[in-house]
Structures are given as C-alpha cells and as structure tokens.
Amino acid sequence: MHVNDAVRYLDELLQTSEVGDYPQAKNGLQIGSSGAISRIGAAVDASESVISDAADAGVDFLLVHHGLFWSGLEPVTGSNYRKVRLLMEADMAVYSSHLPLDIHPQVGNNALLAAAVGLEGGLPFFEAFGQHIGLRFEAEMNREVLRDHLERAVGGAVHLAPGGPVVARKIGIITGGAGGEVLKAAEAGIDTFITGEGPHWSYTAAEEAGVNLFYAGHYATETSGVKALAELLARKFAVPWQFIDHPTGL
Image 1 (cartoon, helix red, strand yellow):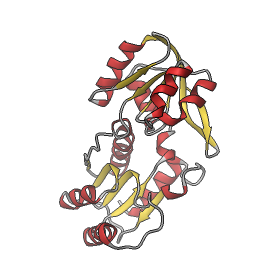
Image 2 (cartoon, one colour):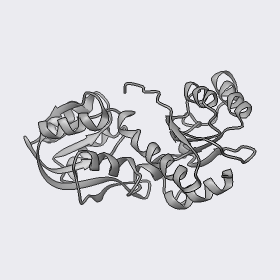
Image 3 (tube, one colour):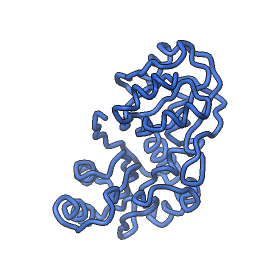
C-alpha cells in the first residue's frame, strides 16, 4: 500500500474536506512519508509516547483522532521537535480525523458507542461547525441499566449526574468532551445525555436542567473509531494493524 492510496481512500470514506471542525484539527494527512506502508497503527492521540511506541512496533502509517496541532502554531522545539524527529526517523505518516470520524455512520465514535449499548435507529442532532455532530435515540431504558451497558462498552467506571428521569427515553450521544453542551442538549429535548467528560459546572447544570448526564471518559469513548477505521483500511489493502493504547484517564 502507498500512502497516497490510503489518503485517497480515507478522505473519500470520511468526507474529510466536507466536514467542518476546529481549525486545530487539521483533518487528513498531517505528516507525509516516502510512501510505502507496511503496518498501520491506530491511536487516540498523536502524543510523543504513542509515536515512540508506534515506531518501536514498525508502524509507518499512524491513524489518530487528535492530531499533532491541537495547540495551534508552535515552534518545533521540545516535545514538538522530538515528535517530528521520531516520525522522520521512522518514516511514519500521520493521518488525523476528528469530527469526520466522530460522525461517520459506520466507523464513527458516536455510532459505535450507541451500538455497544444497544441503541438503534439514531438520528443526527446537535449542529456544530456546519453539520450535526451527535446522535439521538428514542428508547426506554433504566438509567442504571444504561450505565451498566456503558461501563461494559468503555471498559471502566462511568459517572452519572442523575438529574433526569429514572427511565431514559430521549437519549443523546456526543463522544469526547461535550459535557459543557448539556443545556443545549436539554433544549433539544434530550433527557439523557452521554458524553466523555465535561467541566465541573456541567454536573449541577444537568441536575437543574432535568437531564441525566453520563461521563463515560473522553479517551474511552473515542477508542472505537480509530480501531474500526484501521481495521477497515487494513482489510482493504491487506496490511497488518495494531492499536496503540495510551489512556489519559479522562
């Protein structure tokens, strides 16, 4: 597989050029390489630790959800220099997909988390950056049962602000760090909002708005997408892939 083939396939699959996002996301190919791809790596963050582990594993095409430029334009010194040096020495390309991956109907973080907890028939909701970035569901599920499903899906504890009804009926999902949007979710008619994390005030805001707010972990809710995307790419081009786990605990 050549890096250009991989990029064309991913850009088309994810509609990279059509999905709005934060300017720092820089979706698409962020770092090029000499071209040949023999092993794909998938990770949530393009951190120094992840890049180092990927290089040790022989990865030469790294798929990430949070790319190299989240802090904006910065000098290539310190950790930025070390990351670039590692990538150059390993001849490793980096492809990043943030909101295009979150919202994808097959390999997206929202869709995969919903499927993992048994929710079906989701409709787009919550507009941002020119498109809907979440999914909403009509269901009938006790919130403690839903928490059990979430904990199995993310492999860890899930915190709940129990401000809404005991039986969830209008459930919204935006993976990652959308807890601060709980009031907008309530305005959209959501009684139970699932996300990764949120600011401190979002807990009491959820109580006051009458919404159950689940914090299932920013990192934990965003591992499925890169895994599914890497597996799809690996199958198409017949190359091996691996997940590089570097949890933040957030």
